[in-house]
Image 1 (cartoon, rainbow, N blue to C red):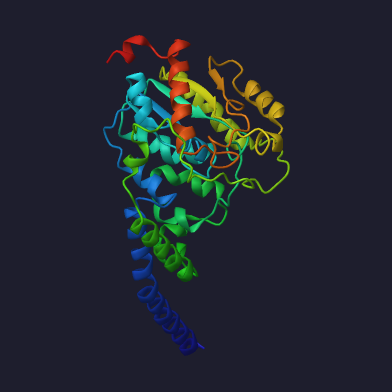
Image 2: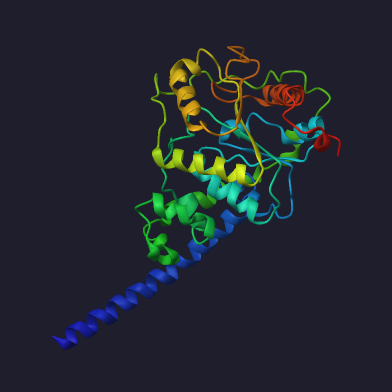
Length: 330
């Protein structure tokens, strides 16, 4: 019996070593590809904020893909005289935006004067995509990802070990490596998309409108209690640090977008959440109505719409005296 136990232990140790030798190089290659990605979400956004040391922006833009596709931070900087930075994280609700983007940024930068918080009825107070994904695993040893362990029952302290967290994910890792390489091979300088071009007042006819972006006919009001609690805490945190928060709902296509949501219920929820806080709200949900000249799909603006909306919000921030004039005159 003793001999059998010893043999079993030796066999398992050999198997473990074989798996380690086979798995670790692939997992290491995957993580290195993830850390270097410049164009594939969510890797590129996490890498972007990781490298934002001593940026010290005056105004931060926070939100999901609607923030990413609605605000040209280069143009907004020129129009307001403030140093603006877009920290949008596409596809994820506020808890990801807060922990991964904002908390990572704030560790290595001074607190901003202003935060434009893009809010909306879709993927803000709840999850529209799976929480546990392989894309997040290269980063879970970082302090700001502790929340990820809390929301993902699939994870435990054992996942700090590479061989555990990537067990059974060989094909997924290879697939991700290929996606990253393909995406980054087509990568063009992101600044090109944000340039204030001479012809930015002209719509690009090549940007076709995607009509059936939303697959469901109706969506319930998102009310994840943990995310709402964190959002309230964030507003109090900003008040304590003298950061002025402006909640903004960027344009949504009326027929293909807002008609799918209980917008009255959404705004009632926002009203309830900000009760007791001096928070300004700018609601542009119907600004462009059904004019597809401005939209890539029902929930996102195209590059032309992005520049047009950026000009509009810059104007309104000034005309409503939301931005301090001493900051603008820098």
